[in-house]
Image 1 (cartoon, rainbow, N blue to C red):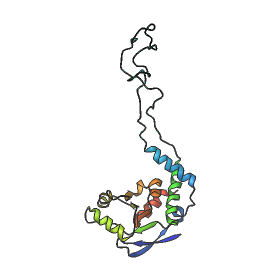
Image 2 (cartoon, rainbow, N blue to C red):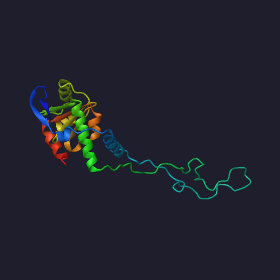
Image 3 (spheres, rainbow, N blue to C red):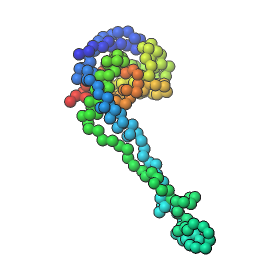
Image 4 (tube, rainbow, N blue to C red):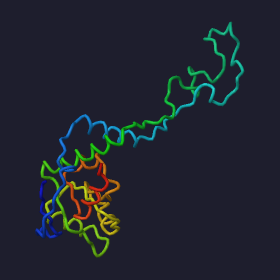
Length: 207
């Protein structure tokens, strides 16, 4: 079982914490991680692109000119796809891009992503991240002290001061344990965990 230093926001070591092997020591498989990331990205797609077919276009159904004798190509009505303002052929329809992935696979991928960060030594554990007020400068200062950039900060409970203070910092995101996901873990270079959140993660992924 790996042991990691617990630091305060000044970068000083205050204690140590054990990282359970069942979550932070799982051999990663690219295929599993790829499947779950694809699922997450697909779920973000709105799938609302749509066009009007010939039958959806408003307009007269009368024949615009006689069949023969004009020298023009025959036309049945003004809603033809060949005419400007007519219907569209083979255009998109509203659809869902949702991919189904088994719950156990999602849980396994999350363990793999966390294990990858630990193996790469990209996990920082803090005893707390308390701010007196909502101020972006305070968060920037802490991250500079800890030498962390492009960080995903995981908190155990709602921390409004931290969440609002960090939302305008490029490359920084705050998530609660229930929102922790594979895509955000892999997307960010550093993973910052509050000490209390480790137990919550263990409880969420217990299986």
